[in-house]
Image (cartoon, rainbow, N blue to C red; front, side, top):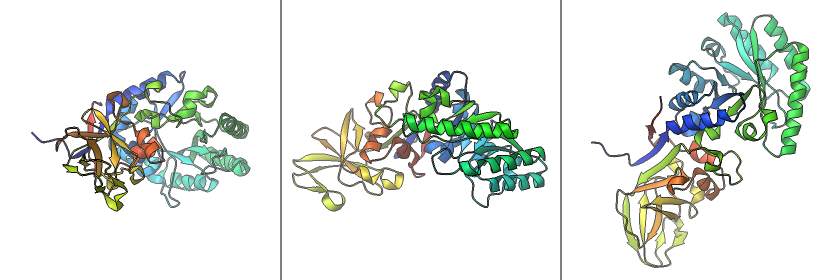
Length: 375
């Protein structure tokens, strides 16, 4: 029998399904897109996509076309939207693979139309309006021209404008309201020009849960699918009826007793105030454990939360277990479900001055993924 990996990110696919189902039940009939970009936030795009669809997601969302092609290659035939494109991206393979294109500029509309001519089939597109996030999307002053171009290309049989969308900044209720008003203006321009999109969408997880007026025809569910709250205000996963999907764990690689005054790790930023026992954990910033959490993060080891001491290195870090017993091979949980006593990804986000999204997404390829449940 093989031993459990030295380090592992354990992914509970049944939790994905349960989270999506719980979220969908709160949407009042609005369709849901499960966002599986960035390898499903580090959880594994293909297995997570299948689990999300089993939970009631209607669509899948990816940032780029390569991520969408991975899903199609795995035999997933649900609607997929990809919205961030290399300036030289060839849209013809996306048309052939029945992948919807999120487009943010009139020039992209014309490039999609040219690909459609070559493919002999129309490109299915969602036209994005920038309502105030100031990233991608057609700027309001250029929206009427982009809509006019889309109408012309749709009438020529080169495009199907399936959606109009945007993205909220989640700054405040007032900011969201201003963006929704801008979105309404953009929708009115599109309707007056003759566009009849099947789906209008602007809400990601936070707005989907808190603003029914932002749900429209489709919402994009991201971080909540993975059991991590989207608000950054201390709301817990349990309060949202969500279960964290990823448990990052390893095994103690070495144990040593040190004397009072002994320094620990690079720069000796921490010295023992008394004789104590240290446990070496074989994960580091090469695996995505944030160096910024040095001296601030905690782990679950032998039933108790233990502090990270000294600097987190590329491959390893140390925790202080005091006078408690610890042995090589004991399990160490960096983060997982707080219901088990483990720190959460958000706890590590606080320790590293970042957010739980980044903590799970940055877990690197050296950490094997193990899967529980699924379809």
